[in-house]
Amino acid sequence: MTIDNDDLMNSVIASLGRIDTISLDEMPNIDLYMDQLTTFMDERLKKTTRHPETDKILTKTMINNYAKNDLLPPPVRKKYSKDHLILLIFIYYLKNILSINDIQTLLEPLKERFHVSDNELNLSRIYETAYELQNEELEPVIEDLKKKYERSLKTFEDKNLSEEERKRMQLFSFISLLSYDVYVKKLLIEKMLDNITATQDKDKSKGKGKEKAKPKEKG
Image 1 (tube, rainbow, N blue to C red):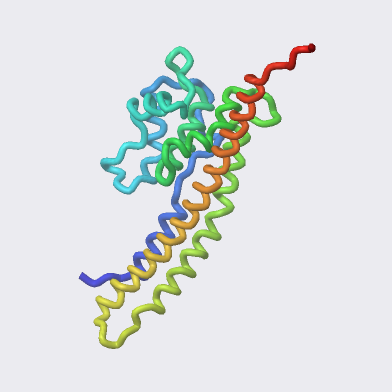
Image 2 (image 1 turned 90 degrees about the vertical axis):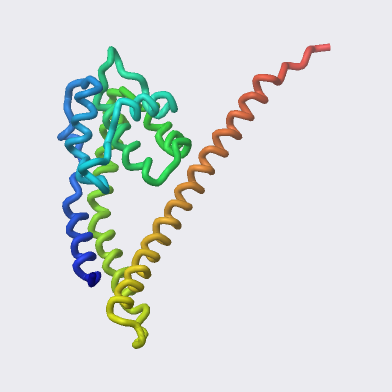
């Protein structure tokens, strides 16, 4: 079977343009029961999975595990609010690259804004900002993909390779470039989260030290 890398690349770019992220306006303004919540997530995010016909977006077990791992506050009278939905969407995307502990560290400031209704900083505003940043990043991502692809086409130009072998190895080069990019960014994210955790641990230690310290008695 002949590999057509150009067709593959064009297909990837086209699929990126069709990514259907959930805007804040599209989220239900009413609280949802578990089944309603999983149905909404499944309908809206199914296209983002690798195998849409079999992959699960969100299940009752997943939600319960997120709550158990302190990623998600419990429902109120078995209903989940828009703030629950926002956190679940963040978790859905982050779990593909980060551990549960790292997600917990990253989302901790967001959980502190859970059900905050003021206009200063609530989860809706945080989500809207992230949504806008994501949309702004699409074109630069596509341009970077094209640049990496063009670079990969300049590798393995050996005359003794068949066209099929050359295309296969150039595809390997392209995937290697993408993988290294993911690796470096993931490493950077983990370093930043480790720094947050270390700072929090240091602050806790200082707090405990103050609690243990007793005032000197007057002689």
